[in-house]
Image (cartoon, rainbow, N blue to C red):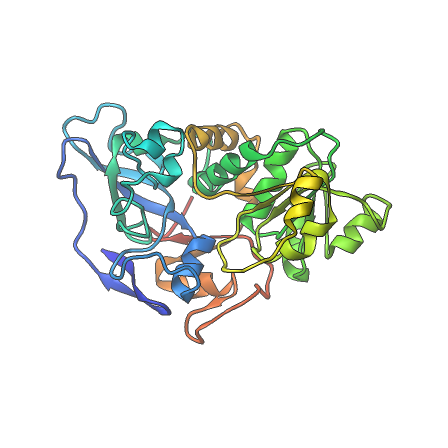
Length: 354
């Protein structure tokens, strides 16, 4: 089978590797239908997020069809359509026992697309606890967004708004920005989405929850949505990693700034303001206890219209085209803002077709 292998920054290539098979009693082998391109993948490829082990197969946001199971597996069967939770955890270390499975101390060697062979490949091997059967009326394209939505659910849990009328801003109209807009809306907030790219902004505007809006700048959002050029900033979700230093002094008392981007950015803040205005600065990454199940529920019940966020589906052989749609040009070794209408890009190792 083919697999997209990471050798080092800007050094990724399709390689022929042996087919995977069930070798353990609880093994589950999945024929991959779709695997979403994540910002983590782009950071790994570009060298801006150097966490992957050289030689690993990339990819972790996947759905597909069960190809083989071990003899102890009873919860699913060959032929079942499933979505994969790509972040196993031991359940025994202190991080796991204190509800922080996203920081399990034993995850090195198990983290898909980072230290364990991921899902930009014909097949993926896991165990039965980390696959969920997809209902017949839900597409595998939609199901592939369960993992990023799980990360959003985990982050949204950390936000404790002072009021449901809090002025809430989401910066960045990529998949996580749009998913945060949906999840925060389900929590009762009314987030405003801000995106500088005209192409991405246009794509996002047709895919927002009722009552929300998207603008090209904070200034435009304040003037047009809140009818106040000095509208307060109660809650910020920053998907860009770049805005803390600029926005922190503008935060309203009791406000919360959450950063979810994985780009290195050193910022200075005034700690007197931190205390004097009762501000919170938090970060969020990966899934927490139960967030994958919650995300799966939101997608399978249609509460979050995941498939509408898919902008591109490309075969595995054309992975460079998919990465380029998100601003990551592997051939030119250049990573910057997306210049075309794009959101969630799915790689289809099996050719898609659903």
